[in-house]
Amino acid sequence: MPSSSRSVSAEAFERTPMPRRIANLDRLLHALEARGLDGIVATTPNNVFYLSSFNGIAHKSDEPRVCAVVLSRHAPEHPILVIADYYLATFLTQPTWIEDIRPFRAVMMPLDLPAKKTDIDRFIPTSGFGQAWVENARRTYGFDMGSVLKGALAELKLDTAKVAFDDRSFGLRLGIEGMTVADGYDPMMFARSVKSPAELDLLRRSTRLNEAAIRNTVASWDKGATWRDLNIAYARSVAELGGYVRDPGGMVWGHPRGTDAAIMLSTGFEHGEVEAGTHVMFDCHGTIDLYCWDGGKTWVVDGEPQGDARRWSKATSAVAETLISAMKPGACVSQLQALARRAYRQAGVPDPDRAVIFFHGLGLSHMELELMTALSGSGTPAAPTARRAFRTRTGPSSSSTGSGCRTWSSS
Image (tube, rainbow, N blue to C red; front, side, top):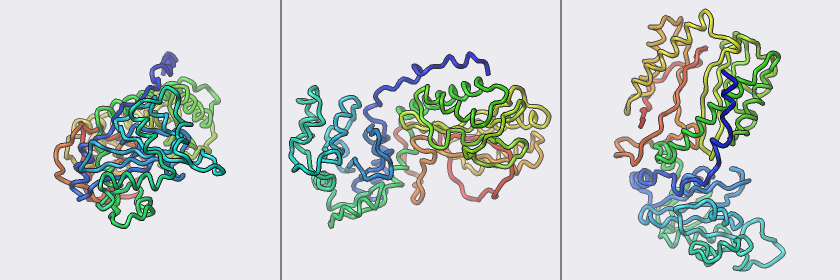
């Protein structure tokens, strides 16, 4: 890759407020109706973000909940957001379509002082007073999350209804006697599997950042560089561009094993030298504004594919073209995999059954799919879907393809 690829800078990925609404709400409401659910309560960070555009800084996914979105199928125009008081001012810079925001007294308030309704004022800058939603937040301020959430459920008449929770154990712990608690994982994933236009823009942006980071990483290679150097270069480039990678690194598949074709995830412990002629298959993970990227390219260090590798490279390009032309709404992933394997066979690749041809979803997570109650014939989606990511890999296959059919959907 030419060194000029470094010209891409962080300005191209400047962080700006998210759209007021990201979610495919029509699809979520359909999922609730099809399952006989009256409403849903989202408390996990990704789902709260999806429904409200709120991405709270510092909070970890396995810590006690600090926010909840309550949505009634019978009053979809009046969702309620319950949130820790110290996050309230976030919405002065990150707007949300939810107008009813109800804070509760949380862990930052001192335990040695009695709770007061005016405690919320500590977290409101002068510029916020007088705004309608802020004044509503001051009126509805409560002293614990449970009581505020129960009040919201009662106001929406969900305290005597069948309500899905994305964290079912949280719903059970509320202990609302007249409410039937259901599992909300699948309804949320059913909605999230079909992307709204705003989400498609976010996914395109994250993919562009990944491409720029990979180009910068390739340009950084010099003789003597190790796999650790390469991992650090990638993570540094991602951070400089404004994105994020997780421990132990963003390079998920690196194949730092010379000529060994075994399929193994990188561990972050690889430290051998990346020599000229090595084939590096970049499969990189990370996020910007919580939306994932996943993928990359195969790079031949300081060279081009030679011998059998050149033939496999050409065959994989042909397979990719075959798959793209065949990926139509309703196609089965297993059929697409069989088609790709046939294309490998026609290209003369020995033992094409060793090829791994993998599909998955992409969005806030890498598998935005229902687990238990996938719907069929569920009506026309309200927005176009994002294409599922795919890649092909050659190496030993650990299991044969099953007979089940998961359908492909595309924009």
